Length: 137
Length: 197
Image (cartoon, rainbow over all chains, first blue to last red; front, side, top):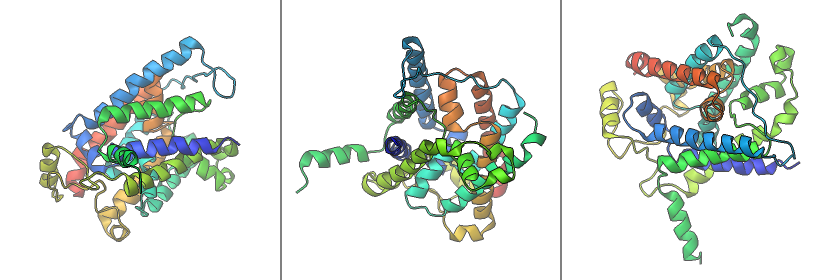
């Protein structure tokens, strides 16, 4: 099954975002007020390191553990979908101070009320599934 | 007796992590998942969970082979364990604190939120079961969750899928999505918060 290794990846992510305070509503508030470099530092460091990683994978034609060359699927080109969807996500991110990763992390750290948040987020995704054909993409 | 070096390691991990350590770790998580032949994207779990709950009966959007995505649910489960470990075993010496700037504390006070420099909690007090029975708590938890779940799928990804994975692969759509994230976040923080708080 080789599935338990993903739990360890998740633990690494969870400890990182908790210890760097990226799960904090106050840190997100601070970010949208441009009052600290902290969150921008996290995101920019991850992207710069990430760009290096992606380039390395592409240039060395690196293979995954499944023996296939690692490929990157280009996302469909469009504007409304990303801009409107992103805007709605941004409203929720700032309001709740959590994105989907921290939602799971804070639930695990003992804030059980995030069960309600998770159910609401699932309902939001479900509502999108129902309305998808009527929304501009 | 626990060997001293293990206590030293625990103390080392327990310090608040600087931004560059966190950034490198997030990139490492992305690399490990790519190396396993997967893609880093946490919000996809919401779609997987809807599909697993039978949402395929209502929309074709949820008719896909969700069983093959079980690895992503394991990442989410691991993130929960990670949150538990960090909050129970690797808490900073000064406790569960968000070390926000003095400017942030001042603007929180302006908004009417009680805050003291060096004592701002990691998680605000409106994340409690009691606050579900207040209008503000209900809006933050229920509407906030809905907007995150709806927007992430509409945009085709969240912070991990677009801001980290997408921008690392120099994807233009992800840049548009991240601009959307920030426009939405700025709108909420600067125009709605003064009404809400």
